[in-house]
Length: 497
Image (tube, helix red, strand yellow):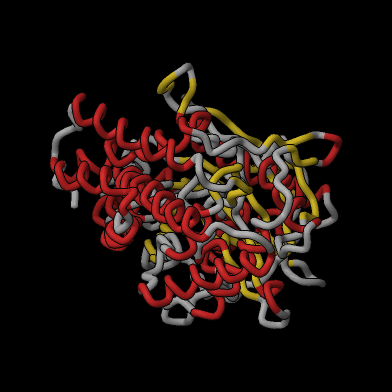
């Protein structure tokens, strides 16, 4: 179904800004047909869009009037077509449109010259005279235009918070639907914008609930805001929230820098991991709170990492990894016996202490501030899925960083630093904690091996599969504890180890 969006462009600056805003909405596979009279601003818009994706305001973007197509190898590849001199409509196929469109974004000026040969789901962007300015009329599928509307709503949010006309640049995304932008102000440090629309419910799995509900994953930004305020009030470093629209899922955050806990080669920096372990020890020594205040008098209830959440995560191994690995689905008998193993292990987890779990305390979510001292050098981000559960979970996610190989010697040093800090802060049961550490590491890795396959098969993100060998190596380390013998036996019986 085709829908339409109309945007007034009173001057060239507005046309450039539209190009920059569209750069944040377009994805690989999008084809944009730019139509309009000579001088309507098609090339101005295309040039602004390409420079925004390149994050280079001075990038040379010549008009492809004579070459017909100019390609740019950017974060998302972009091909800029000018078909004014096209001899025959069918010649557009000889320019490689199909291949270029499958691997990147295509911007096509004078698309009417290739009438009948453009992809059916192309986005049409017409620039028409509107008084002394122009009117941009975008039409296409609603699923595509919704991305455009989202980007424009973020621009309105920035305007409403005193940031009219600022530059927006793609920062990164993650394994979820969240996206991040760098907001560059004419004066003052950059800000970070979190774009996290409310989660779309998935298929019902059990008890009338979908996966996110059973696993207690955050479905909007209120959890991030509540945990952020909790951490900052207790002296832990997390980004200050400068502005927010919780209902829309837009947050404007302090930029805590780009220095992380890995070196320039992507290897772990021991000091930074060890200091993060000490931070976790301090956090886990704070009073436990499961009701956290939000702005406007709201309250966020921190969910428990309960049996249902633990087990549905471990079932990702059955649902995604096992069929991928051996080509056949798990049998009913395998599902029953695997579930029984985890029922016993979840019972064991009840023996451990419970506290706030940030859930993904690993290298992508830890920043390092070299101008500070002690644990204040460690800043935390991306903690919206926090729960109340075994403290060992966060320590396991740090010691067995899913995206970095932590050698056993360093892993032991990180674990020792955590335990030493916990002892310093009060009574601490080492033996029970070590058992819980192995249990939570096993639970996390059984989840991750399924997630890597799901990201590849369902979400079209195959790059995460490179972590699979490391994840299995970590899983084997986790199983090296007597309490995990039943799980070890099951995995070996299924020929997964």
